[in-house]
Image (cartoon, rainbow over all chains, first blue to last red; front, top):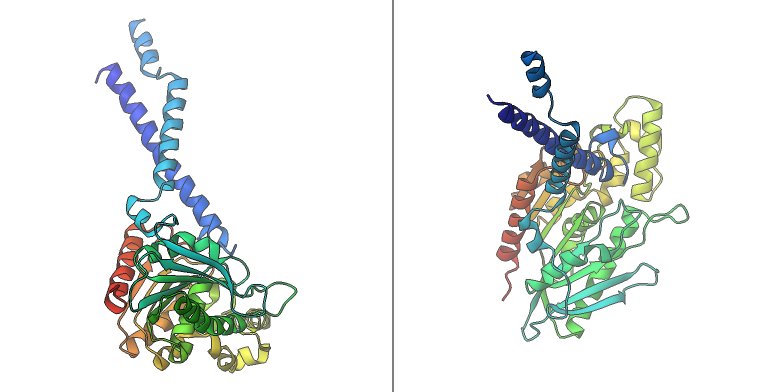
Length: 44
Length: 327
């Protein structure tokens, strides 16, 4: 594996982690705001 | 020397580049989860005069909140129309018919007369309850039908629907009051509305515990909802259930078994999922044509199951077409 390939692989992993964390962040916020599962969700 | 240099280079994905890629990907992740799927747009229509005529804030009673909005479709030449009443959410304490404008516009764009009805919300200063709210809806419906007819849109059948608190009120009207409706109630739909009050199902609020504190809490919550005083002793011996019956829609299914489409989130921490199962049982026992959707990853907002949301909306459309076809 060339150095460029390694760099691309690392950046790809970072991108996947960032993408998944972004979706999880929205999901957590939505759960919190609209009575989902986070912290009991008893906000309504 | 060469090896040292090479190792240094392997680690050298520049930090700024890693941070930049992470932030871009994080933003893309947020966007992908935040943007509503394309199929959802067809069910939320921006109101315009091309769709029809909106008559807003028509009164139906003496209360300040006793108002309804009437959406009349552009095609005004028919002999009869189906009416869809959609009741707003808000935990019986908040919300407004204006919040459902896009939903009502969608229904109107399909050719239905649509109506959003406000009801007196419970506050610290009044004694409004689910019972009084359901009675306000019952009083409003004949006036909604009359207003539509006065505008040249005779109604021959109706659907009653809603979200959360509005769903509870819609079910109460359909099953408890439907027989007295001015036109046949042919369909009811909605999501996450409470319809039964067995305290063992309300464990998310701690009401299922065999303690005095739990019984007192159950008595407080159920008294507020039912609009009658319920004591901890009545909670203990089960006699409270008779007092809850007027607002327990599941108990009325046999009285008027209306075709039904409902959805409930398994992780709901507002309207406990377990409290929706008696409704499902009642619909089965009474051979109702119904569809009951479980949202396995969602709470009260049904927010984490887009595929099932789509099936639920498609079922609503199918039932509307089946029981209240646009002529």
